[in-house]
Image (cartoon, rainbow, N blue to C red; front, side, top):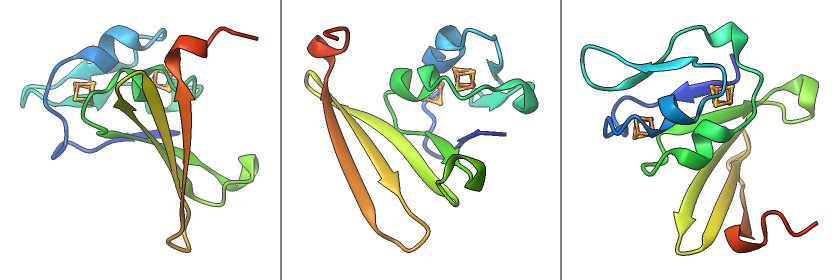
Length: 104
Ligand code: SF4
Ligand code: SF4
């Protein structure tokens, strides 16, 4: 499983479920999002970018060189803020201007 949803932070908006191209997320009876088929997630990060509450964490496992680092995405105006939290407690933030997202 490459993403984890924090039910305490989830506000039940359903944006992640709509964003997931694999239809892997659904709102549960408690109104919070949950993974339906965790093993099918291929880590596209669409749900992270869609979540307005920062409730979804993406795990960068050892196979990806992350050694348990988690990634969360939040919005600050036109900026997407990608926050990497490493197991040693260090945090790195990368700001991406969403208006330049396709400027490559
Ligand atoms: S990372 Fe992509 S495939 Fe995985 S649950 Fe999120 S939107 Fe779906
Ligand atoms: S997008 Fe975030 S806040 Fe909205 S349902 Fe999904 S996890 Fe909850």
